[in-house]
Image 1 (cartoon, one colour):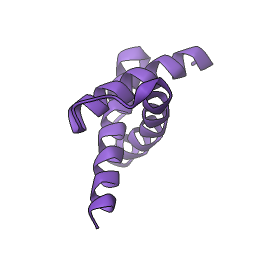
Image 2 (cartoon, rainbow, N blue to C red):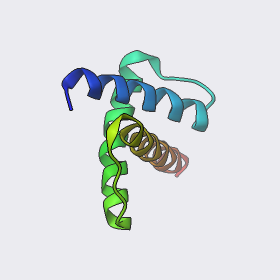
Image 3 (cartoon, helix red, strand yellow):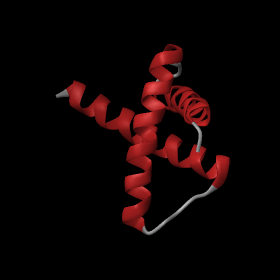
Image 4 (cartoon, rainbow, N blue to C red):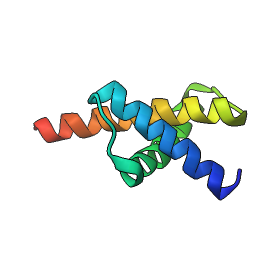
Length: 80
């Protein structure tokens, strides 16, 4: 997957996850960062469960799931 595709998926996933978890995005760079880290987290979680995804939509879903988990963990750490 090309670098531009990573940025697009990261931005979309971060924006969607931000809307799910907090009701708003984090700015373009924040969304991309959350989405890319979320894609890594989602890929790890999916591999643990024996799931795989392919294509743009599969990568986007994986990144969104990972970004939501990432934001949830961050919110729990901040509460402590």
